[in-house]
Amino acid sequence: MDKLYWKDYQKEIADDDYFYERSCIRQSFFPGSENTFLKIMKEVLDKKVTDNQNLHTCTGIGYHADVVPLETAMTVIARLFALMKEAGYKNFVPSCVTSFGLLNEVVETWQHFPEELEKTRKFLKKATGREFDIPENIAHPSDIIYKFRKELKEKMKYQLVNKNTGEPLKVVEHIGCHYSKIFPKKVIGSAEFPQVLVGMIEEWGGKVVDYPERRHCCGFGFRQYLIMANRGYSVANSKKKFESMQSYEPDFIVANCPGCAMFMDRWQYTIAEMEGITYDKSKKGIPVLTYEEMTGMLLGFDPWDLGFQIHQIQIEPLLDKIGIKYNSGKKFIGKSGKKISQPNKPKNLLV
Image (cartoon, rainbow, N blue to C red):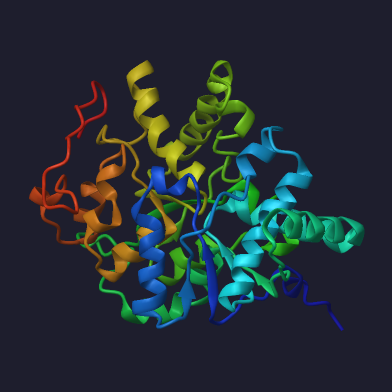
């Protein structure tokens, strides 16, 4: 009997009851995305999901930058698991792919070296008086949106289709390295064939762009960006991807990593200012979305509640292409009802 190899590329994703951990950097990069995920879960899918005001960083950036020792990282993560236990949950959902990768690394360490688990229990008890359980299920939010992609499609007001031509939008999907490459067996499709974004795009009417540098790193790389002198390596990685996808004329890019989305959005502005180059025919750049923003956009959420005004590459051309209505006058109106500061126009990137 032939082996069904695709079964090796699947993962278990809990159906409900999610303990959600917010990201330390996503709230700065794309502040609307996490609230959008929670709204989708609670109001659209009617799922039970909670987060906690006592949440904190997983230490991922510090750990991967060799600032935070592994023992400290394990103890900090143990406190996150303790908060989950105290809230009565067993399914942990980290917003950030770096958290996702580090959580799996810590749990794998405990499984192979039980003495480290016992040491971490003692450290946490001594430091906080808390106890913790290892989650029964760890899933990234993009896993969950993928899992319910068909249910979400039934509730969507729009599809990834050009309203003027009726053709599927051409979409570049970018998977964060810390999601797919650290523990490939923990993701849908492994590092070779990650399906979370592909599944969303194809289910919702779009066409995935398969370009040569599709699995190339976005260029974030903590050691590249945290050290100012190394940032040229970061922008060079992103530039390599833009040059590779340019001839395919994608309508937008979607990513499941906060750093990837931020850098591919911001570096387009940087390259335009440095070299006068843009990677689309309109000279406005290629819009970059998080997967939550893409989902909320198709569900009909207000674009400015999604936080599109925070993006460097303007979103209006994409909204127009799909036929999504929006109020331009509300773009820079804050939650208080007052106008927030409006950014200066770039020199070479058209807005």
